[in-house]
Length: 251
Ligand code: ADE
Image (cartoon, rainbow, N blue to C red; front, side, top):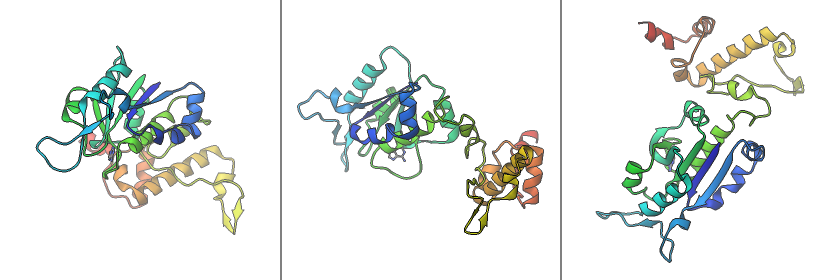
């Protein structure tokens, strides 16, 4: 996969992109991430990337010319999704990370100031993504969040291949608790079943814990999660009274 990131603050990226799983994925050749300085596509002496808004009002707006020139240069003849990071975009989810991880190429434009000239949205960008209902100083942190969530899904990126499939949200549920050695720490014991070596019992315990935790913390997820009849029975026993995904489908 190739990822291009267009920003006026390229220095924000190396520390995040070169560390940990993303860094290793790059070293392994699973992803080629390039960060570009938008100012390199300006044509004036001051390398201007923003200007005052038509119609007045405060703040500055990112100019369209350098953004179009940069994307057209970087993209070349290839077709690639061009994603603008903005608080007005679709709310980023694990399902979107999985979709993006299927792409050969991704181009991210990090918005700044009050926003970008609307013609960038209308004629260049193919998707707009927000990482949450709050306003950041720019799209850079959002781009890093998305790149991290996507790259860790690439086959070979994680040491333990099944780990991503079992993540919180990947299953539609939150994960249950994890434990490691020692078996007793300050008198607090690791649940006996995890040390039993009985794989089926461990799997059932984990599933039940995931359901319990999701019920306690994010019951809204239960209505959308793919659940077995056994899951549903456990949830009812735990006191869940809300709907299940298949209920409405069969109605
Ligand atoms: N730029 C500013 N705020 C943002 C957000 N919440 N998500 C994505 N990009 C942004």
